[in-house]
Image (tube, rainbow over all chains, first blue to last red; front, side, top):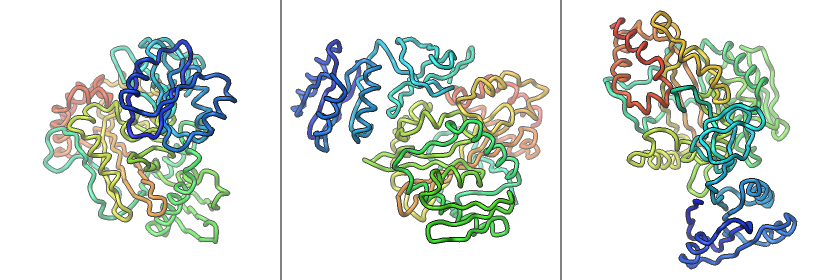
Amino acid sequence: MSWHIVRGKQKYIILYEDYVDITKLVRELCFHRSLLSLINVGEPDQLASILNKELMGTYIYLSLKVKKTREVLSLLYDLGFSPLDLQVVKEESERAIFCAHCHTVFITDDHPHAVCEKCNITLSVTNHWSTFHHAFLGSFEFEGDSL
Amino acid sequence: MYSFPFPFEEGQSHYFYKNNAVQMKNRTTVQITPNYLKEMKLKRDTIIKNPERCFVALDHTYEAQWEATLYIAKELALRYPDTFTMTSRKYGFTLNNHLLKEEVRFDYKVNKEPLNDIGKHVQEDLILMFQREGQLFLDAGQLCFPSNWSLAFNKGMAFMDIHRPVPGFQEGQLDRRIERFLLHLCPGDPFERSNWSLMAGETLNTHLETFPEWGKKRYSVTEDTVGNYVHVRVEVQKLHRLPKTYTILFTIHTHLLSLKELSKDLNKANQLYTILLSLPKPIEEYKGITPYKSHVMNYLEGVL
C-alpha cells in the first residue's frame, strides 16, 4: 500500500474496510499529531450524512478495495469534495485501469497487461496515474515498442 | 503568407529540453492557413464520430469557456475581417464565417459547450487550464489533432501529473520551473513555443485511442517511401491568460511537412539531421521515431 502524508490540514479521516490494514497509515498520521477520525465504511446513506457534517480543511484517505473506492469517490464528489481534498491509498494487489481505447475503468490484478472488460483489447498497464479517474492508464503496445 | 513553422532555433545543432516559450510579438491566439477548409472538415468529422475523445468540460468551466469563445471570436473578426465578421448582442454574438459560408449564433448559457462550438471554426486545439491551490488543472478542452495523448484520460488532472511520463521532464526540476512559469503568466502578455516530432503518414488526428490504427504505419516506412511518407510534425503552442476568469487558454496548431518538402532547404535538412543524431534514446522512443529512424537518417544523408 502506498500513500503520502499531506500536512497542514485541520483534520484527517481514514475511510476503511475491515479487511484492509491501515495500521501504518494511522501510525504515521499520529506521528504528525494530526486530528484523526477512522470511519469503517458501511451503508452509503450513513456515510453521506457523516461526511456532510465535516468542515473545510478536512482531508480524507480512502483505504478501501478498488471497487468500493470508486463507489465512495463518487459519493465524495457529489458531496462537494474535490480531488485535492482526498487521496486514494493504492492497493498493490489490485488496480483500477483506464482503457485508452474505450475509456472504461475496470479493476484487475497487479499484472503488466490487462484485457479491457468492455472492448476486450489487451492493454499494457502504464504507471501514469490519474488523480481524477483514480486509475492507471492502460495503453497499447506493439512488439518491441512501448509508449 | 503562410510558411511552415520550422521548430529549431537558428544555429541549434543539438537536441535539448528546456522551457522554450518566448514572449509573443503579435499576440495572436489562432492562425488561418491554406489548409483551413480541409482541416475544418476533418476536425468536424472527428468530433461527430467520437465526441467523447474530442471535448471535455467539468461543470465549473462554463464562464471560462465563454470568455475563451469571445476572446477567439473577437480576434477572428479583427485579424481576418474578410473571412469573419462578428455582430454583438446583449447576451451573445453572431459569427459569420465566410469561408465556410455559415452564420452561427453564440448565446450565453444557451450554447452549452461554447468552447466546442468556437473550436469548430479554428484549426487549433483549445485547452483551458484552471489555477487553484498553486497548481494548474486541465478541466476543459477541445482536442481533435493530438500527438498521441488522450484528453479523456487527462481530464481533471494537474499539469505535473499529465506530464509525468515525459522522459527528462523532471530532470533539474524542469517540471517545477515550467509550472512556475505558467502560474505567473499575466493577462495581455502571451507566450508561444513549438514542439516537434516526426510521424509516419499525414494523419492529424492521432488520438491515443486510435494508436493501433496509425501506430502501425511507423513500421511500413521504407527507403523508397520515406521522403514523401515521413512528416515533420510541429505544434505551435500559444499561452494566453484570460483576464476575467484568470484561466490559461492554451492553443495548439499542428503543422505537417514531408521530409521531401523540408529537404528542399538544405540548411534545414542539415539541422534536422544533426538534431536527430543527438536525440537521446528515451526521447526518440517517446516520440515514436525509433522504428523508422534509420530510413530518415539515410534519406537525409542522401540529400546532403
